[in-house]
Length: 360
Image (cartoon, rainbow, N blue to C red; front, top):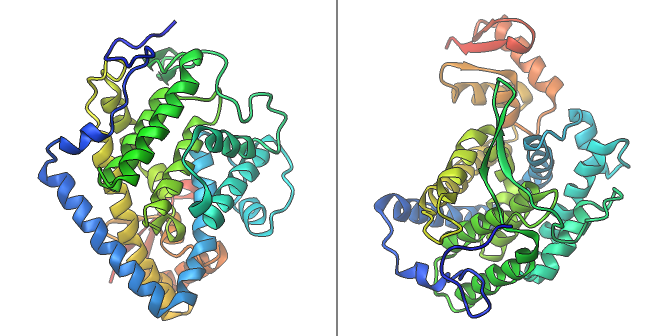
C-alpha cells in the first residue's frame, strides 16, 4: 500500500499547495518561454479577426491530427482514411482501436464546443472519462482506479522496470478533489500564471494516475481544456498531441525527471514545465507558418514547394503531410513527383525508408 511520506494536511493527505508555487523564482528560460507564448497568442487573435474563414479551415485538420496522435502514443491506431471518416463523418467504429478513437473524438469535440462551461472538478473529469469509453463495455469508465497501477518501461531484452508508483486507489478520489480545488483557487484569485498552473496540474494528475486505463489520453485532453479556459487556443488549430507524439521521448523524460520525490513533496517540476511551455510555443510557431499557407490558397504543388523550402536535410513524405495537413496524401505524392521530374528534389531509399533531399 502506497502512502504519502511528505507533508500532510489534517486529513492525512499530502498537501497540494499551488499558491506557494507563485513565490518560486523562475529562471530566464521559463520567463522567456512565457513571454514568447503571450506574444504568439496575441498574433493568433489578430489573425482570427482578419481572416476567420482561413482559421476555421485549420480546426478540423487539428481535430484529426489530435485524435490520431494522442491514440497512437498509446499504440491505438487505424488507417488514415478511417481516422478521417471517424472524425469528420463520425462513422461508427469497427473494432476496439476504432472504439477508443471514437471516444477520444467525442471528448475532444465536447471540449472544443463547451470548454467555457466545463468546470475543473473531479466529477467532470470522471464524466469526460466515461465519454472516452462510451463505445466500450468498460466497467471502470467514469470511475477512479480500483487496483494499484504502475508507470514502467520495457527494454529490448524483454524485462520491465517500474519507474514510478502512483497513488493507491483509496487515496485517489481525495487527491483529484484537492488538485482541482487548488488549481481553481490560484486561477480564480490570479495567484499563479496560468502557463505555470496548467503544467503543474497535469503533472500532478499524471502522478496520481487516477484511472485503470486512459490516463495519458485524459491528461492530453485536460491540457487542451485548461489552455482553452485560460485563453490559449493554439490547440484548436494546431495539434498539441501531434507535437508530443513526434518527440514523445522528450515528453517521457521530462515527466520522469519531474516525478522524482513526488511522494515526499520534494519533486522538481521545472523539467516538465519547460517541456510543456516549449511544446506550446512550438505549436504557436507552427500555426503561423500553416496559417500563411492556408491563407495564400496555393495549388497543391506550390504549397508542397513552399513546405519543401522550409526543410533542412532529409525529409519524408510524412513531414510534408504534417506541414500541409489540409492536402490529401495523393495530392502531396503528386506534387513530389512533379518536383522530382523538375529536378527540384532527389529521392533516396525505398518503401518506408524513402526520404527526399532538396536540390534548389
